[in-house]
Image 1 (tube, rainbow, N blue to C red):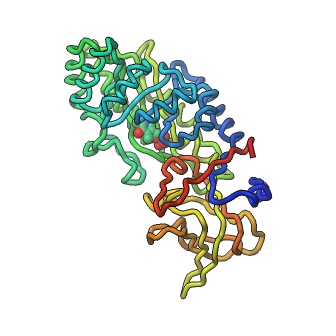
Image 2 (spheres, rainbow, N blue to C red):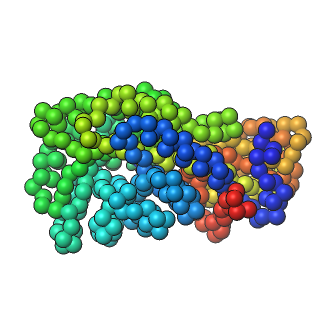
Image 3 (tube, helix red, strand yellow):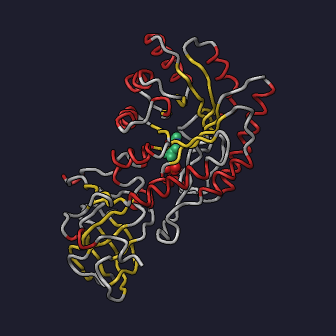
Length: 386
Ligand SMILES: *Cc1c(COP(=O)(O)O)cnc(C)c1O
C-alpha cells in the first residue's frame, strides 16, 4: 500500500534526510476544514504557524483562506510574508517582547491574546506611543485537563500559560481603564494531540459558565477563541490521512453557546499539516547487537525531535524493500542515547541504501530541526515540484 505513495526513484537521486510534503493531501485537508467549519455561522479557523512555518506550506494555507495564529514576532513576519493580512493574525505567548508587540501593533493584527496583567500594561504603553488601540483577548486557564501527554497539556491550573479564570472580571475591569486597549474576546487552549471530543466538550461547558458570568455583569465580547489541539492518527496515516474535522466542529456547534453576533475562532496546527509531511531518510548500516538488530539511518533527532522529546510514535516504513519483515530498533547518528526513532518495530528487511519513511512528520518536525553536531538543516521538497 505504501509503495507507490512516494516517488522512490526520484528520492534515490536526492541527498537524505529531507522532508517530503504531499501538497495535494494538504489541499484536501484544508478543503475538509473549510467545508466543515463553514457549515457553522461565525466559525473562523486560524493556522497555528508554530506547527510548520515552511514558506510554501504557509502560502498554500493562506490560499485556502485560513488566518494565522502566531506565538512570536518571527512567526508574524513569516505570516505577513506568506500573504496573511494583519486582520487575520492573532498573537499569543507568555513572553512577548517589546519589538514583537510593536510589530503586532504596526501590522494592526486582529488580536493580542494576553496572558498577564503586566503584559497588558506594556501593550497599552506601546500602543500609546504609536497612537494605536490594541485589540486584546484574555487567555484564561479553563482548568480543563486534556487526556494527552503531560508535556503538551496546557489547560490545567498550575501552568505557565494563561490567567486564572477566577480573575476574569478583574482583568476585564483593569483593561477598561486603559485607553489604548480594547477587550474583544476570551482565549483558551487546552493542549495538543487531543482525540477525545469529551475534552473539547469540557472546554465548551467551561466557556458557557464564564459567558453566563459575563452576562450577569452585562459584558458582551465580540469573539471566543478556543485554541487548537485536535489530534491526528499517528498509527494509521494511510487509513486516516484527514482528521475528523466534522466531529470537532460539530462538538463546538452543539455545545458552545455563542451570543448573538459573536464569532468563534480556532487555532489548528497539527491537524492541518501533520499527515502531509514525511521525513525521508536512508539506511546507513544494519548493526547486529547481542539481542537486537539496529537499523542506523542518516536522520536524527536534529531532523525530527518528537520521539526523543515526547516518546512520540511515528509509523516507520522501508519504502525500498519488499522482503519479509524483521524487527529493528531504528536509530540516528547523533551522539546521544535518546537519538532513537523507534524500538522493536517491524520493517521489511533492510539493507544499506534503503529509503525509510518516517510518517506523519509534517507538524513539529522541520520547524524544530536543529544543527546540533554541526548537522545541516534538512531540506524540504513539495510533491508538486519534485
Ligand atoms: C500550539 C498552539 C496551538 C496549536 O496546537 P495544535 O495542537 O498543533 O493544534 C494553538 N493555539 C495555541 C495558543 C498554541 O500554543
